[in-house]
Length: 161
Ligand SMILES: Nc1c(C(=O)O)ncn1[C@@H]1O[C@H](COP(=O)(O)O)[C@@H](O)[C@H]1O
Image (cartoon, rainbow, N blue to C red; front, top):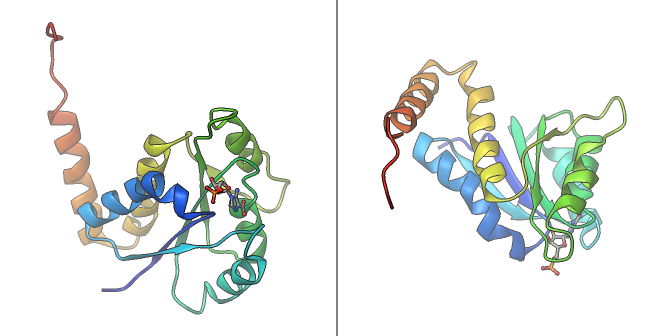
């Protein structure tokens, strides 16, 4: 299977969150690779990843990091492959630090920033699939069915728990 999506994260500790993006891509039959890449701890790895992203066939990069979350923005500075940023929740500041670190990019180097935490990571998977579905009718149909199934699962009336 092709791997058009790169899921990258600053640390192993981000994987429980970022796995939500991988789960969505699995459900939709979209190929991906998952890598630990840190702007702070492995800058050379980040540089190589960004430099080779286009030639390796990556079409979307999902980048998750927590705290001083510079990874998504630095990746966006190194490649024109669209970067979707996921702010990982943190203990000290609840992920608001991650969110603000990713969100306010300077003009010219955008990062499509998701919500904090695992819902944001799942939505990053859906956003990546939506981008790829623009040029893949089979994936578009699978995504439509996935969305319909979610809609169908929502009860019409509340019930006592
Ligand atoms: N924000 C970044 C970057 C980066 O932005 O390059 N590299 C690691 N980190 C973050 O540090 C947090 C704590 O990492 P550890 O759990 O390894 O101490 C993680 O959420 C990671 O994303």
